[in-house]
Length: 333
Image 1 (cartoon, rainbow, N blue to C red):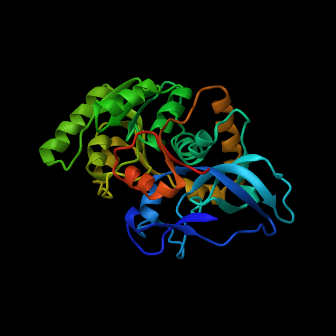
Image 2 (image 1 turned 120 degrees about the horizontal axis):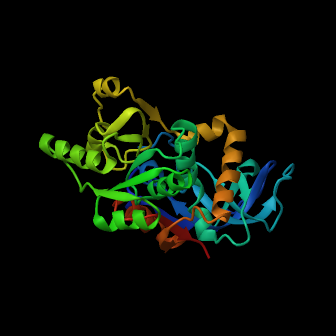
């Protein structure tokens, strides 16, 4: 079988597509014929050794997939051969076949396309955990989503609306704002691309405040970090919750902590991957809740582009360019 491999530290150009040994399912495992792989920002970081986890090389990037169970190992009872599934894993998905611990497999509805299933779990799982478990978002509250046209951002927009919030989408272009509004956002802010000097940050803060209204944002969902974080935090409501989700814009921001004091707000970390490992029962329940929202038509992954497995490196490069909107998916024939 074939797989896309990281053999040396570097960008997408260092990945190689080659033949690898066939796999067989061991105890507690399922062998999955991969149909689609969702590309996420951690895939950009992990091949450069910039992610929290550094798997030994060679490894395949790709943290979420959909496919069909091809074989099961001893003791596996939750799935059977032929089941259509989605799965979340740290890496390894960009291959024709993968071994997955059976406990990480979730059956998907017959009507759910493989590309949407592969684009579902990490983005909606992250945003669901952020809004439900960490922010405790309530109906009627106002939320600002930074990076609202990206995978986790659009998921946050849809989930925020499903939970009854007023959602303001922050994006780097009007085209991206328009997409977020089409997916449910109530309003949008075009913040452009940095770097920003001090006057630029003040102007950005004024934009955020104007869109949020006099009382500010009850919840700010920040998936981009960098120079956008401080201006956004200045627009938060009294006792608001600032969600630290990621740093897609590049730099990890340095926040003046006096702002947290003056606003009486919470700065809340969102590390979905670690949470799933520490709370497996809650994780499984969250998947059920998300699939119910999907079945009701309240959430639906927006897959903007498809790449074949042989061009998986191009898919990762495209996501890393910050030009992609929604989800980028690699398909496997």
